[in-house]
Image 1 (cartoon, helix red, strand yellow):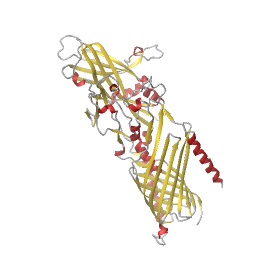
Image 2: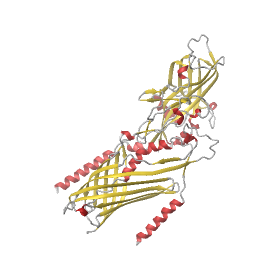
Image 3: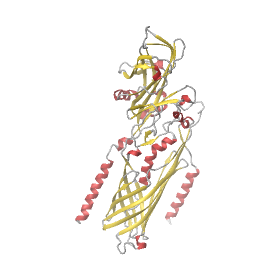
Image 4: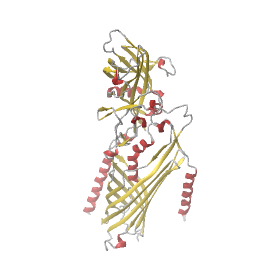
Length: 344
Length: 216
């Protein structure tokens, strides 16, 4: 009865956020990234985000049909592979026309007097960037704008800490569990909202796969994640998979699972174009000169995760640890506290 | 019971492994953001005679990317430096033709000289408000010998990587006094018999790429 009021508030709050959505406005002199380069630069961090969102979706219980409510906190750490430390960065269009501009750069210690493809530049996890020097071949517009460019650098990271997971787990007598995460905060006067709903259903008993052996378990799990801030930022992610577990004794569960996952979303920001005709943006990139909006779509390298771990049960809660094989290999550590526990 | 204890020990070991995995320079890395910005210097000489020395003044306060991040600046390093000739006209007003003409300058050297505001100037902005800072050393950025002008004519393929020695000094100076001179020193033209050789016009370009590290 009491929950109904909260749900109504939540729905009102959700629609209010959409109705009064305001665009994020950034300075037009933000010329470090074009939309395409920002996309490539950030793709690995969205991979980390997606992997950590889709972490801690199963493995903390044997789903034996006992009603249980737990509070679960999980941390993860992701190993960044070399191939996610660079991306093929965009160059200004005029750089391809040697009658407009000549370019040169240093690659592997050698001066190279042509445009190198792919134009390897660091992602957010990468290292140093490579400036491309450009000499316009005539001094009239538009050729004159094709000048030297440089790129932002990476954070030189081999390891990234994943987004921590704080969730409520409701285990029901139907041998399933629902996982719920929610977070909100204001950003530039607009609410940022994060919501996750996960579902994990035991299925082995339906087919009597293990007979009377209740220690072994096969389940299917799925999760849906949503983050948004007005019309400027939207992210959805999902995972669907199958997991197996075995309760070795009253204190220890081993689990193994595979899941498919994906991420979709966008970030949009408009640039302040006040007085743009009098104050020209100095950049060889057309998008930046014309102060076009920054628009990026979120992508992830990870489509599959294979996860294996151990869960140690106590009377008051649990501790679990798992290893994940994915495009960013991940280790995760979780703690759980039983808030409510009833016998079937 | 023994089995349970062993498992608990394994968990403690795994927890230590987890902490170890997180124990990197991670925190330090995510506190800073590094980006490179090219600074373009257009130096236009009219009635230039060589051998000669001339200088161009740079004030990083005129660049928004710098001023916006100045208060959070951790480090500034000159990464690379490039020099080319954009236009050249002989003393007889004939333009230089890179396909036909052969013109070799014996040597061209570039120095970085830090600047300081002249005394009693409240809001120094313009070149005339500054003077070389003799308390700091002068740094040789690059030296090009036997400069065949055809090879430098609108060709950006003479890139100099700047030593860490200069970069370190720049970091220390640039926070409070982000102004400097790029001094160019031109030697004789090969085969020059007169003390000075005159040119009606020489336009040159310096592109200097500076890496900034700012705290987030």
